[in-house]
Length: 161
Image (cartoon, rainbow, N blue to C red; front, side, top):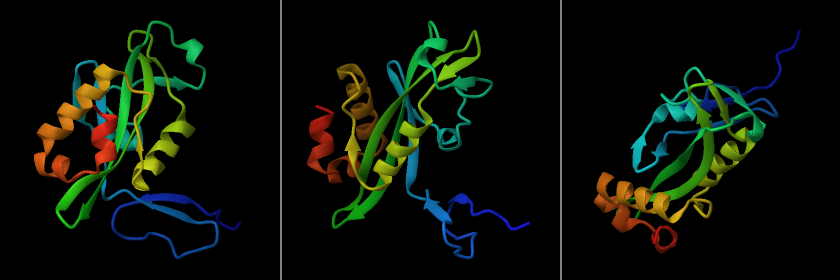
């Protein structure tokens, strides 16, 4: 039986021999931040859907099945370098609702993957965030690394104002 091509999420080295239809996605410069109400924190477990808030949760594609859930935002952040040094190059956000008591959650996996891809392509997609959530994210990015914030494009700063 012939092996089917796979999609691999990798670090710095390729694990495939380049078959047609084989895709690789380098996540070396990608981080994930979780916005939980008034706080934002890095949670690399989000990259593989194994963050602290996702563990033990059964996810559904139907938002209506998750009643009285708490809204979280997953923010994908790609880092790059320009003439001034490192900066926040791609920043995108996508929602996730979790009811811990019922151990049920909702997220649109395709949307999360597309937003991750947008971040890797150095795009800024933060329209869905509320003013409060934008403020929390802005404060996090500024305090996490002031130099990267200052080196970032105006588009990011404008979207978080």
